[in-house]
Length: 267
Ligand SMILES: [Zn+2]
Ligand SMILES: [Zn+2]
Image 1 (tube, rainbow, N blue to C red):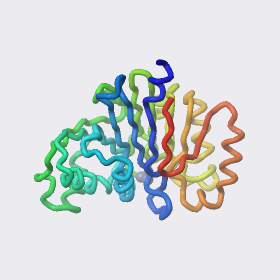
Image 2: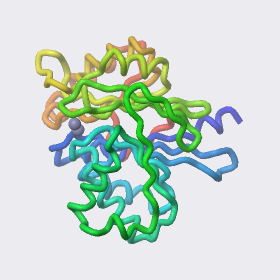
Image 3: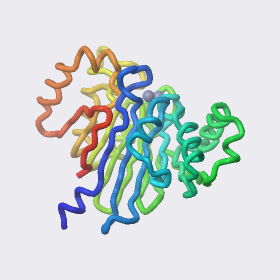
Image 4: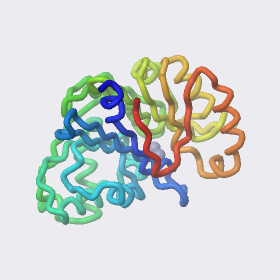
């Protein structure tokens, strides 16, 4: 029974790319938790950029499956896929409310994007959008799991999120360099997905994480497993071997660089 319950939470990397990567869809993650007995599960979509929505519907044909959308921040590679998500749910005649969890002003940004992409459709949606504001330092229960957020260092206000289920915890950075607050947020969490734009400090880009920085951060936070995502496209292509060597040498931490489409068990 113990193993069965452990197997029931999955992390699906719809995409692992940065904004401009033409080979990897934008970083976007689906968390799926099956309740005991197989009914009343929970599905969460973490960020939904330009190229993530088609991947979502490749993976999930049920218009009612998604419970909660999290938007880390308002750069296009993290939320410009939302208008298409809502349009297609409308087309599929979704009825269930969709909960949008984000920083203050989040639902307004989503509706503005929707209005530019498909004018007039926000009023025609066949399902309600329910906003839950989650700012840095907040802790709120949504759909039976606990949500908490902390701000990273990024060009636009970005919140990392931690979700605690009954027997699991998951952290997603969104974009940005880790901070003391996000280190605290990730304390002893089971699985963290963190953006690592480049390998180290010398090449580092203001407002973005690095492979070495993420490893230090995860070690300090006591994260059990770490997935590095949102790697700059040229770095991913040309420095793959160097990244592999770094990961292999980090013996005390389980680290992965997932492929787009990859599904892993959270526990
Ligand atoms: Zn990004
Ligand atoms: Zn960004």
